[in-house]
Length: 630
Ligand code: SPV
Ligand code: MN
Image (cartoon, rainbow, N blue to C red; front, side, top):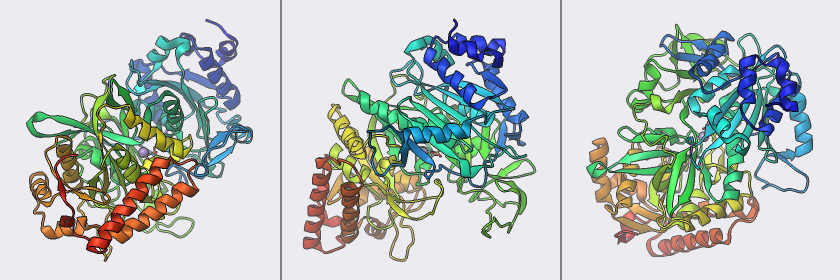
């Protein structure tokens, strides 16, 4: 096959790479690669196929170029990102908006032409002296209605290696689809790097998303959340695709919860970063399908769900042998793992909250490190970054669910939304129905900013369904799509709200780190009609007897009536204040919030007011009537 784009590429590719690229019958793809090459001017272009040799080559190159270094355990490597490149960077991540189009005010945006000029200007000549890898992957299982082909051109073999661990190989899928492959494309360059192979021009970091061509540009950054195009960058494009095709792309984990008589029930969960998402998906004894991005489709009235990804890019803070046995296991046994931004001493990784003695010196994201070392602003540098990460393929985990690659996905029985709310929401509750759950928990999800995005921590904010940063359509439309999706299902998943961060008056957390397992088991019982609930103003809350039994069974813990009262007393004033904030947000920031949202919130307000009138500002949970099943 020959076309003007391939002809232009000939001089940069060896014979193998050239024929691999030419074997894909898709001119748009060739045009994308030719443009990337012309713009970034790499010395060499290498095209990766699905062959084991090509997959192994990306890892070898990451090591050869010193973007990663080997650790003691076989297969383990360490990669560092720059001091100013330790998380997703909202400030410089922008949607390119063509003239005449408008996006929600909540989204960071720039005019398309101006943005393209800027980011393409920064990419110009950025790969001189380097090799550009062209990688083909898919989102969702292969050979499935869910699959989306993706291509990434990058001069980082760390990024390329991460793709191997986190996604499915997609070269054969591109070949199979040929010109029918409607793909997402990412062009990434690390930009200038220092001797440690770390991007240095963080002031020129830009991540721009062009939905008109399904293309993402990323430059002067290496942190995987900013550079691995299939992660949050493609999610923005997927949300638009899902919007136009009538399905949902969610920032959710997917897990199998194991119940009585060997039954397995699938749940999805949305939590802002660093709010307990991966640790919920990884609960001991349960199985994991995915920890970050899930797609839902209504198929014959059933809600079917898949993991968009095939690996985990997880936070490695407070990961301990006791609380996270499955993660601990994979982080300690031979096999491919990329650690990033942890401390290395004598070839061993150390992280914050590891539960073991840690060294006073070594190498970390700041370079040579010793206890007490200060950054340029005089702040002490911790031994590892709070947002340090590990990348690992799911199939390496001993709790990986066997349905991961099922092209038809799994049947979803429940959804949970969890924020970081010190004051109002109960630790666990169930929506009265699909619409109430979506609005009262999903569209009302409040959290506090954490270290997973660059900026100040602890600032309260609404993070709609924990996916707000990535919603590339009007936010109100997104909420409406969720409501409508329920209407396509014969059996809607139950919707739950959880809050692992409720505190008492003195500021102490009211729950232990493992209590989430009890909430999940309660949800499983609710799905099967095996637990009662009390009808509180904000949702259906568990009954004491069920929790007492579950705490004993799951955690071998005595759960007292005092615990129950502290956790499930209805905080009317705090809930009313929350409603005010949520309503204000939807009125002022969200373009065209659905009418149903205001109705459901105002019904919640009425129920709270009625409870206050009858029982005062802090009604005990027993005040609310027991209902059988919904
Ligand atoms: C998150 O922060 O939500 C993540 C990691 O899952 S990142 O790739 O940075 O998005
Ligand atoms: Mn995430």
